[in-house]
Length: 260
Length: 284
Image 1 (cartoon, rainbow over the protein chains, first blue to last red):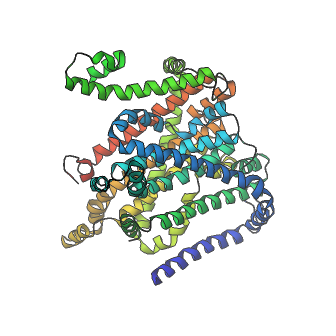
Image 2: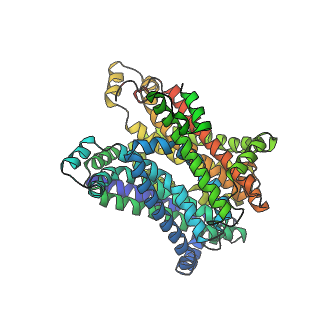
Image 3: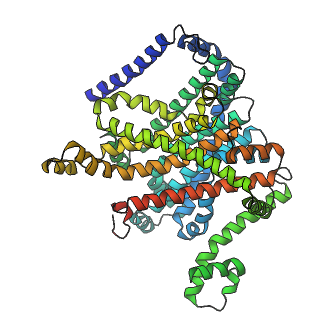
């Protein structure tokens, strides 16, 4: 506990130090590209509390949320089917291997051609990119389930639904969450990219548009929002993971390893 | 044997297996099913495209058309110049990221106090996709190849750095003790114990970073449109409305991604021949 406190104070004083250096070093800055931090902060307050929070931040969050939700539904259900059946696995794996190898960022224009410059195309695009880590990890998780679990389920005459809900899904969940962690960062990258490529709102759009209009402090404030958004979403994910997986011994010991 | 049955499976389908023995039929089934699945996907694509149920007419050109276009493009210089440009950006960015990440990762991993200080900033910075600073980078660096390389390196850097720090923290303590007992100098201990045991982690990071780097390369090419490469070509084809070629280039991207995956895995196997994870005959 005390070590935690020391680490915590070291890291935050380090961050505060960097912020302070930036603040004072940039105080009298006349550079076009690097305005004073105080200017950025006041522009940030003006733009993002709360005018553009509703017009740009909310659409970005909405796209990330729907895209991730879709990729979870598709990835987990397909992953369970593929992971639990060796026959299905050998049938679909080569085709999946090829589709997965396509860099997601290359597919965006195709999504726009099919679905137009709409929220639907952005959500579908994000889901397309974020589904792979979830799908692959669910397959691995379902494959790696202890045979004894299945035997016990059979002995207890559990029906297929009960077996899925009480045995297969809980056993695969730590692995599913490992995939979800990657999917969150993929979704953030893809939403920013999609909004910069073709959009009329969103934080990515706001930031690139500010740069095009040469509103440099606004552009900086957009980059700040993107950074905070990424960090908060990753943090929120970690909190959810901790809540959901606390019961899992393997997960706890892997966390202990990571901390050591 | 296997390749022969695959050919039969492709040409004649499972129905031709009528008179052959059970074992041959089984292996035929194994080879035919993935092919049948791929054909079914292509058929679904074709039906969706020709009935315009999901998309406007012409938005999903027939798979055969796309394949033919890809074949025709492969005979021209255009595709290969684009591939070479994309690979160049990807390779320089990835190599720069790897060089910096290995040095920094080894240093941060070895020095506990430094690690405590930079842990939170690393967590903060690595969460931010490199594409977020693209507007700033365009202003500062201009729209050159350098811009793409810097953003690719920034994206590929984090997975490599995290893996290297993790690698140093997981060096076997007993092996280090042994080195001390044998009175190996600091440099020998580092070269013969720390570096080799970090290699598997480095390759895991490299595989992740290679995929990130390819994604960022194509994203920057698509967004900036003056760097050349496959991404820029895809953007131009979309603007020009040449949809079959658009899909042909996306498929080419897939083949490139596949080639990169296979190549990194092969290099890993070659370099880590001695490591337990690569000796599959021995159970873990």
